[in-house]
Image 1 (cartoon, rainbow over the protein chains, first blue to last red):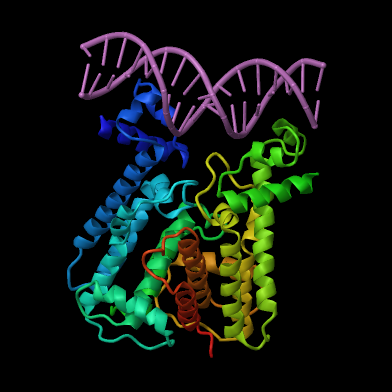
Image 2: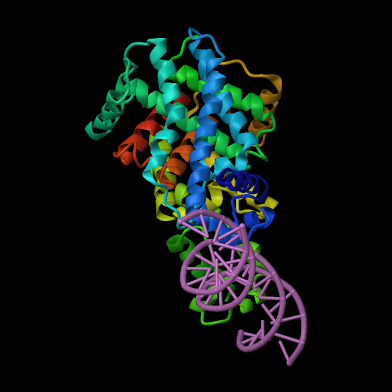
Length: 214
Length: 214
DNA sequence: GTCTATAACGAGATAGAC
DNA sequence: GTCTATCTCGTTATAGAC
């Protein structure tokens, strides 16, 4: 039954936009709204469940796309993650909005969502680590607090990576979700028409910036 | 009176998150909620007015920040726009969400919002044009449809610019709003603590990528 | 015990009559 | 401008069915 509720709620999100109505979900299940409270203590709990599911779904899509590429082809893996994230977002725009759009008013994400939220960027990090590029170029000096932040993140991960390279990966990560957000939220509509080409081209630009050979 | 309503609504957006309650606005104005319909046909019309105002406010902030820098200092002007956009977004998070977050369900932005929405990217373009960098590096080949898109955009603008350079500027533009979105929507919270330093560093990385000297 | 329905509260957007 | 009425919503207390 919990699964059934989530399934319907997910579909409502997909068709109706960010508004999720408990009453509408219950109506479709031929159930009264208050009956939902047997399965979820409140609306936020249902939202949290949907958010966690969405993070996992996105991560699965990205991992699956990336896994289909030859391990030695770092640039191919990079492109695969980018395209995988974009394809998932276009197929699940409302869920994408839930994850990366305006936070739901009055809703604060529990701490459990931090780990699944970082799956994609970790994938990008792994690709670059596998490429074994050596220390990154010191294009711009870092302040000490920033360097400490990045070192801390590097220490949590296996493999060889320095702060400069990580900053470049983060640029790629921000670019990826910035671009997908622009497209999903319609902010590209009157500007670029060849969106797929544009996306691929930007993916290549950022792969260059990160230093992936190819 | 219309101005009064907008003023109060803007303040409500700023303090209360994305939820805009007509009743709350009316309550504060000591009138009844339905009286608002004398000035705005519905909630969406009020939203449209707020969105247009927000675009203008953001553009003004960016222009003002950029105007304070020596015309010859391209990199300084680039940084000023980035910091100006970030400062505005942090000061007006709900309005930022209105402009760049999840689209309001059932609300579609009228065409009037296209021009004010492009003010910031035009500012970035102008800075790069003023730097007179010559043709950009052909880092990655473009498809013909993409090249046509970019040429069309270039033709709408004065100055000397080629497609490759414009693609790099767009990367900077996406990066800027991706980064600001991450911060405003709290997606950076458990990752980077020295956010200002991180932001400045990314601004420098993208200025390098675009080719601004300094 | 476990689930569901009924009814209610307070909040909201909106339409129409005055 | 107001007031009233109708619709939505999340949520809870309570009562009843299996």
